[in-house]
Length: 124
Image (cartoon, rainbow, N blue to C red; front, side):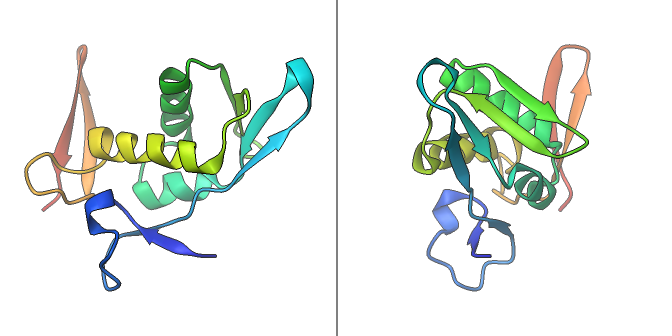
């Protein structure tokens, strides 16, 4: 499986330490019931150290689509036809907003939720 660097500004660095699998999406169904299955959402979430539900919910809010995650099988569904390139762009937005540290850009962060605020704590 091909791995890519976490964070768009590190795309050209072959020796970058933080890697994740390339997003794979498969369009299923036809007509009104068309949906996109993000086949390796669980693997991507593991590499980013975030729950897979967070990534899927972010896809849903950015695309304006309903999402469904099945914990037992790891199936991640986004309603509508969305190609892997578009989902990868949205995933980069998720990484910049909820994974990478705002000051140093390191993806080793922990999400902290206090009352209604979400913030990142850098492990470095």
